[in-house]
Image (cartoon, rainbow, N blue to C red; front, side, top):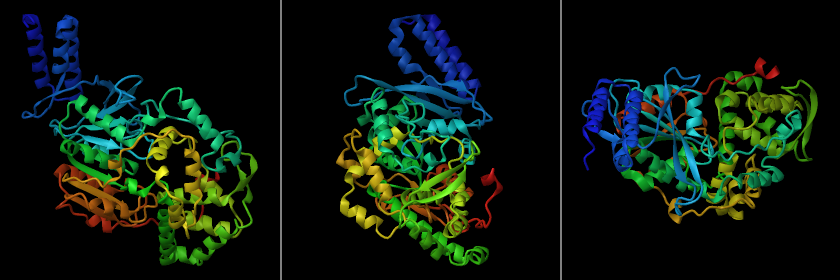
Length: 529
C-alpha cells in the first residue's frame, strides 16, 4: 500500500530527531507523536501504527523496539529527575479474554547515562499486596540511583495493588480509641464487609500470583523489551520464581532478596521464623556488654512477660499519641506476640525489644504500646484484598492441622497468627492455582539470593532450598540482617550482580561484616511526643 510521500517524510524526520536526542523520555515521546500522526492520516494505517511505535536505544548499536504503552512525563516530589508514567489494559479474566479490564499502573525511571543497556530492571515488591509503582513514585533509594546509571527501571502496580484496581479495604474503626490499635487482627466482620465491597469492582478469584506474572510478561512485551532483569523482595521473590519458571528465556538475571516460596505456606512459617529471630536477639543482648548489664536476665524477663497472659489479657493506660488523652487498653497475648514479631523486621525497632521486654516484666506495658503504636497512616500500603486473594488461594488452603501444631509448638507466637488468617479466609473467594506452581522453579538464569541471617519473615532456609534448582544461582547470607534489605552491602551486591549478569566472581565479603546496631536502653524522645 502506498502511504504517500508526506508520510515517508514524517518518518525520516522523526528518526533523525531521535538519533540526535539521547534522552530516553524524548525518544519515547517523539515516536509516540509520529504514531499519532499516522493514525490521523487514515484508518488504513492502523496496523502500521502498532508496528511502528518504537523507542530507540541511545547506544549506536541498539536495535529498534516496539512500544505499545503511551508513556508520558510525570513528576514526583521526592525524585530529582523526571519519570515516565503510563497505563496498560489487561483482562481481569485472562483465560476468557472478555469482560472487565484492569488498567495496570506503570512507572518507568529512565536511564540517567547517555548509553542505555537494552535489558531493564523490573521490580517486584512484597506483601503480597504492595504496589511497586506506588512505592517507586514515593521515593528514590540508593539502589534505584545506582541501577539507573545503565538501565531503565520498570515499576508496575500488579493487579489489585497500588493504582491497578487496588483491592483496598480499611479494617480500622474509631481511630480516636487507643484500644482499636491493639484489637485482634483480621476482625471477621470487617473482613466480610471488605469482601462484599470489593465484589463490586473485582472478581476476587482472578487476583493470584500466576495471573499477575502473566500480566507482567504481557507488559514486558508491550514495552518492547527483549530480555529483562528482575529485582524482587519478600513475596516478590515468590512471584519472580514463578516468572522464571514460565519465562526463563526472557530473563537475563534475577536478584531475590528475602527469598520465599509456596513451600512456606504463608503464614504458617511465621511462628518458627519469629522464634529464631527472637532467640538470636536474646543471645546477642547477652553477648553485648551494655545490653547484658542493663538487662541481665532478658530470657527470664521474656518468660515472665508471656506468663502474664496466663490469666487473660493485660490492661494498662496509654496516652493516645494523636489526640493526647489517657485511655485504658486491653492487650491479648496473640496481639502482643504478633506486634512483637513485626518489631523484629527492622533494626530500628528490634533494638528496642530488650527495653520493652524488661519494662513489661516489671508491669510497665506502656513502653511496648508506645513502640508498637502505628506511626503515620494506619492503613498499610499493602492492599488487604490482594493479600487475602493471594494467600487464601495459594497457601492457607494447604495448611493442615498437623502442620499448625508441629510448626507453632514451642514458639511465642503459637497458633494465633495462622488461626486468625484461616478465619479471615473463610468465605473469601479462591482462585484456581495449577499444581505446577508448587513445584520448585528450575532455571539456568543467573540468580542472586540475599537472605538475612535473622530474618523472621523469610528465613534463610527458603533461599537455600530454592537454590538447589537454580543451576546458576548463588545464595549470600547477610549476617545480622532482619527483613530489611536496604543495607549498603545488599545494595552493592545487587547492583554489581546486575551489572555483571553473574554471581560467580561476586565479592561478598561485606555480608560477613554487617553488625547489629547497639541496643537502646532508654526510650527515644520521639516515642514520648
